[in-house]
Image (cartoon, rainbow over all chains, first blue to last red; front, side, top):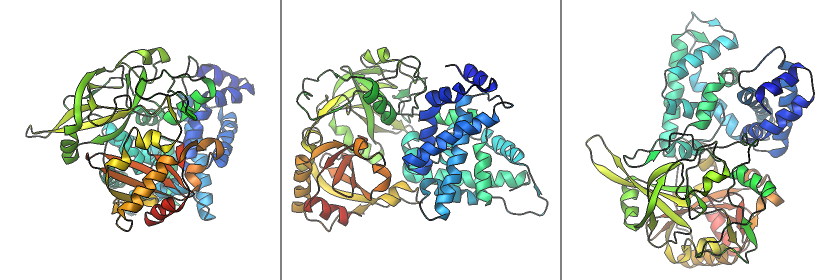
Length: 186
Length: 316
């Protein structure tokens, strides 16, 4: 089913929207959750929750691309779940490592900062992404959006693992510098 | 926590960046190997899983590696039919040769490339590109259709029914060229029964192994700042031979059917078998006696016993 037809089902409050979403994007969302949670059962729960989050969001929202709209919801649900599991010391895996790495990108307090809305921080991150080459942007997104391991990214990009790690480390520092320059306080 | 908030904001970036990353394909560093213009996307795991579900497989037999009579048939890679195009795909380089899809496995460059270059044998043809993530099954029937382009060669010591390669060159800023060799292997649409079918008949591990390195799974998986490979020295050559013989004799299992969480729940370690022809075979060992070829997904030889335990504990 075409995306616009699925979105129309949501707008008409037709529950067929959920079945159509699952049929078309279930595998995609599950692959995202599975990478973060490394567990089939909890990944399935996240994917199921994704459709209900979408049900509550559309309308009013009308996503530009359903695929990444659903993917982002699944990712956030899975990351929250991974953090819970980590607190309970029951795992969390690759996702927690990726989150912890992001500490290096948190700007230092400068005294002039103001607390921004999430969407303003996201806009700043997007401005930074635009300054990167496609290759670096892909590495960053694969690690910190998809929570792929450095080994997986190395294989995808044709790098050695150590080169991938060093690239990711430089990107984290670069993001930090950018956020500091834009006075973004998190 | 602050990093959670930052992660959430990264999650909210425009979907175009996510799509771009998902479709990004590595650039060849070679002056001879050029990637095709379209995205080269194929998720072996899901597509093979889909193939298992929807395609009754009858892969064409290769003369040199017969499939008939085997206990397990690894399904041929099939692209989804129209309407299923949203099956998730990720990037794997591939070449169609004699009707089979060969997927990229190892890549040797630098000094390794110079050593492995001597194995490059008869030229088989030219991989001409033409496959992208929107390709349908019919596109895969075209000989030397591929997601990479370059000259395709056989490799000395290996059947082209199993392993072929693309050879190219890396060029530094001074114009000095060093060879790089990418291996492509036919690991789908094949019949397998025991470990001998892959590790013996195709790879010749028992005869060719020279030494072993291992990498602990946490180091392999976790993006540690430095990857650490240990030379396996605490196990004798005879004991390694015994492991290989048990591996040859063990039967293959498709572990996804018995335990979909297999990959995530078991203790595991990674072995790098350095062969006397300077190639490297990467094995993945799981507690309980399971040994898999790194490039072959959920197919594992089950070989519990003393020979396995000795090596597994020495490498964990």
